[in-house]
Amino acid sequence: MPGSVPSSLDNWWCDTSSEYAFVGFSYAVDACQSLDTLKREFKDIRNTFNGRYVRLYGACDKKGFYDNVVDAAWDAGIGVHALIWFGFDGGNIYKTRRDSLFNTLKSNPKAKFVTRVVQYGSEPLFDHVLPAKELAKEVESAKATLSSLRIPVTVSELSFGYTQPGQDKAGAMAVLKAIDFVDAHILPLFAGGASTAKNAWGNVMGDIKWFSENSGGKKIYLSENGWPSVKGQGNINPQSRTAVANVENEKDYFDMLDSKCSDLKAVKGGGVGWFAHLYSDSQGMGYGIYGTNGKLKFPFKPRTSC
Image 1: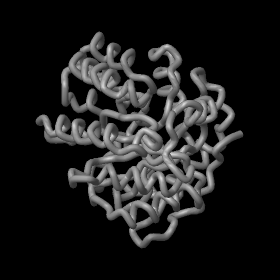
Image 2: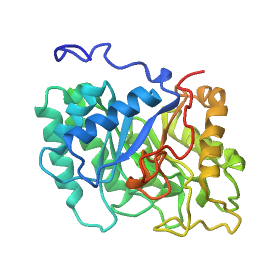
Image 3: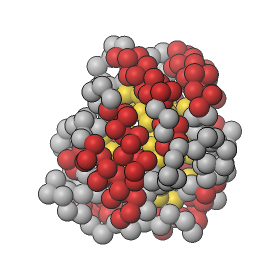
Image 4: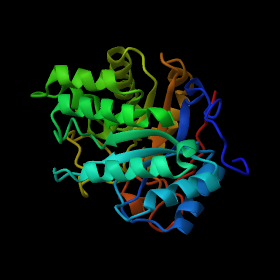
């Protein structure tokens, strides 16, 4: 990062066509990590794994928390995919979180230089937290609010969230039209017929093709993307009896994505960038690259280009 805050965003961000293959980690913030922890772990993501971005997951409603995220990201030289979290209980708390985030984006001079995109999530269409047409209007409103900061807006969602039975298809397509990028949730352990991670590529590419074709070729990131190392805990309950969840398959899944770098690079719209969900098992049991003991569960050195 420069020694002082730049005066303009001109030529600040890399072209999205360079953002394919591994781009970073989903990072849960429910623990309201301290500034020191954020700095240490963001630097680890940047320096150990060559991550470009941290994609926030969950919510911390502590006053000033996103200022700490901005400071830690600036210090680490890493970008942030910010998140407006609906949660799983309904209600309008997302509005408070949205307004708090937008206030920080406007007031903190560094914020627009580390915030690559603002997401609505997680899976608001699948969870029916808002009628689809209202979510589309929410996205359009956020785009207008953030336009002077040149921060794009998206929705972090499953393809099934757009197409599930009972969904307002016109409203869902309005959401897909409104978003600037596609943030796709790719969790193939939960697909019908899931078996092992090595066999998941067809499911992954099927979702990518659906998003590409139905979005008109917008840039795609796999924002919530992984293969957990456990099942039967929390909400990790695959529908397929043949689905295998263990550390070997978690590793195999990311190795498979890494081996498909050229395929991901070739996708219309500037290629597909993928996040690993999550940074640590302490943020979501089974999904982490690090275990709860703070040690890597397996060697993890994915390519960032090919």
